[in-house]
Each structure stands twice: as structure tokens, then as C-alpha cells.
Image (cartoon, rainbow, N blue to C red; front, side):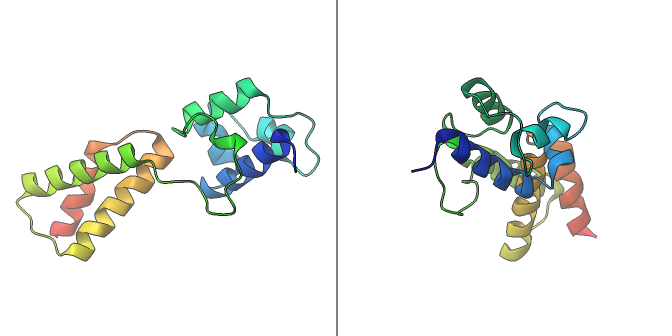
Length: 138
């Protein structure tokens, strides 16, 4: 059985890939560059991911408490149901306000783009969603 530190490292490495690399992840976590992440998850990490650091990362990425401590069998990050629901509601409101009736595939693509943007920014960006919806009207 591997240590909790190894599990956290593996999970954080997977998240870094999902979030577009170390620089993107570092910015999301409030760092100016990826050097701190390299200390945690680089090929020869010089620091362990402590309990405190793990909980801070989970909080900043809107992950459930303890997520980094659990093995996820390569399934990737679980969908954040609350954020996804907020994206669906925001897209539906923007579509209603624009007076559009998109087909189901277009609606699904809008929600997917809104959710990806939410994962990157950490919040549901309604002005961004409104711009996406307006683009579909053209």
C-alpha cells in the first residue's frame, strides 16, 4: 500500500495535467510560477504534500476535503455537481434572455464550455456565458 504522500502526489500530478500544466495550476493556486509545484510533484520532489497543503489545494480547486488522499484509479477528477448545476442554470438563463432555442447538441456544448471555464477560473462567469450564447446566435 502506498503512502498518503505518494497518493497526494499522484493525484496532484493528474490535476496538473487536467488544468493545463504546472504554470496554469500554479496560477490557480495563487503562485506566480510552477516552481513550488515542482518541489511537490516534480521528477525528484523535495517536499511532501502535507495535510495543510493538501486541504488548501482542495479548497482552491473546489474539491471535496480529502480528495487528494484517495486513490482515483485514473478516473480523473470527479464532476463538481454544484458548479455543473450553476453552469446549466446560467446557460439556460442566457439562452432565455437571448430568445434562442438551440438544439440539444448546441446546448450541451455551451454547458460544457461554461463548465470548463468554471474549472479554470474557479467561478461561474455569467458575462462569459452570455458571450458564448450570443456567439451561437450569429
